[in-house]
Image 1 (cartoon, rainbow, N blue to C red):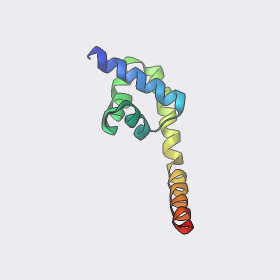
Image 2 (cartoon, helix red, strand yellow):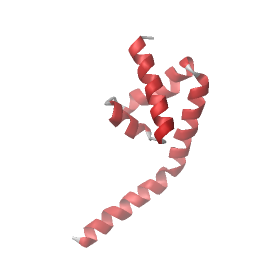
Image 3 (cartoon, rainbow, N blue to C red):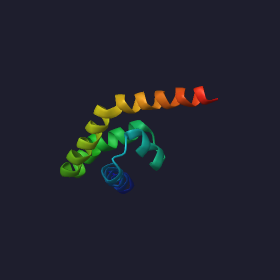
Length: 85
């Protein structure tokens, strides 16, 4: 694996853990695609640092469990703003 990929994988992992970020938010921050972030976190990180991969997996599973709540809140805000106008 190339050095810059390994460095990006570790930076992504630390960013996701520190900020409890979603894959989409991490992709936007690092200016890569969601599929790249997902591959980095699920496959490449496991080879580099399995302990860190486990921590990231916990954060992503928590985000997945909460996503229906975030979606509901976003829809609520959308219609609240539409009603105000």
